[in-house]
Image (cartoon, rainbow, N blue to C red; front, side, top):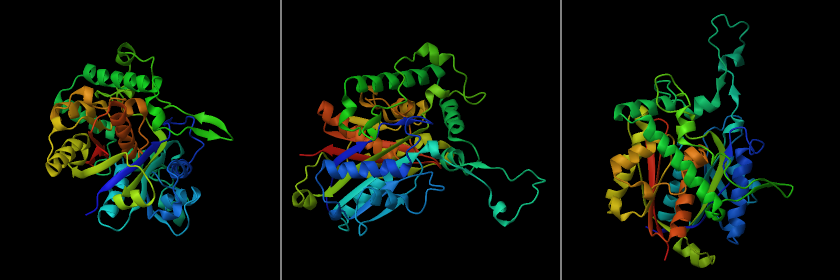
Length: 393
């Protein structure tokens, strides 16, 4: 089996829901990053074997959006592409798919990642309208919001994921104060990373006609405070999570260039990291926020390392309870977890986040000269994925 290396990893700044990136489709955001990662590494795109992109809300965006983004980026027609939909884990599973193709010898050079425009999620009319509904006496034929229905609603029980996060938090008897401390620290860390330019290595500014549209993450709130958070009502009556302790609905993309050792030598590339292993796990759907714990435990068993032997962790901060669980059940100290902030501050563009946290993990490891890192994230329907990387020689 071949070793798999990460040559480069980039992302867009993350745009707020209805914010600066609303006028860019997921395909356009993905195409921009596919093109940039090719240019940054002086690649001939015809040498690529395949492009793999995660995306969750694809209603009305046309066939095979990964292929559309690839062609738009200038990748030739004879290089194929495919989509991955594993809800929030789509971007990471795209990377795992690409790595598996290289590991097995079926590919040598792959671009993998994810893209999402939650701002452009369409409303959907029920199928009955296709077959001629004259009068809806029952009032059952409701328009569906694809953002909710395909993005954040549990298909098994009808609850949205925030309600399920509340259920886990209640079971664990987490206090609102603890969750708000996690959220506050997320914003402060993200603000600090932005202020000191730590994200510049990973963020590709979005421009239009040579005018910068967005160059930093749009959801960071440097002026927030624990006092402000404490005054917000819970999103659901009787719940514990508020808008402040939940990840932000967002737009963005991330791409990662994967290569075999042979491709690195052949195309004069330089590896930034090596993929050590990856894993996944699943629980009951409403326990999705706990699933990363199991995915990481499986990964550590598989690779033979302990939590203490991992320098940095990234866990997608879908909700503040996600971070609390990671700290408590894996015994990961907060100074090793999401050191540049998490999705509560940065945002959570569903199909892109799995690749984004890998990108940020590599950047943070390089910034502080750490050797080994693990990224993990939960996904709707109850599962999670994880990946371990090491700094390349």
